[in-house]
Length: 193
Image (cartoon, rainbow, N blue to C red; front, side, top):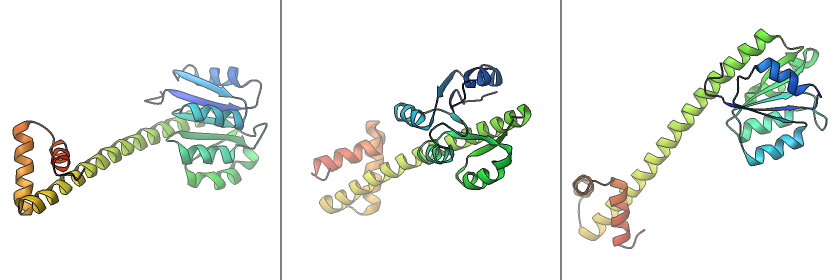
């Protein structure tokens, strides 16, 4: 069921947490780490990240909303906050704009699993967008190097912009290197790197 979500951090001060979530999740995740409070969760998150965080509020050292918001703002993790049904709407109003899923307890298994499915879909979509963003940033960086190299060729060799562009494309193709690598060579040669 977990799609590409393989690791989960469970933050709960309840003594029955491991047994409860082992049974509820039924080995759906390759790795399940349990933190007993917000402070321990923050320490764990300094070392590594997870695909999913489930916070069983309230915690012994804080309620859990600040932790949930902090995790969402600093990681690409999905966060589920489990709260008493009497305050679920109030808590949801505080955290839903940040992307935190709120589930009321006692936990309805069907609602819990539906929420996990939605969170998995959101996680996969966000990860896809992040990957696309990374590729676009790399392309922009490559274009900046090529544009700087064109400017150098225009300045030092009196080429037109079109000539510089064609020169870089042809040289890169002939030498079987990327335009960025050729641009870096040009910038180094003319001392502009």
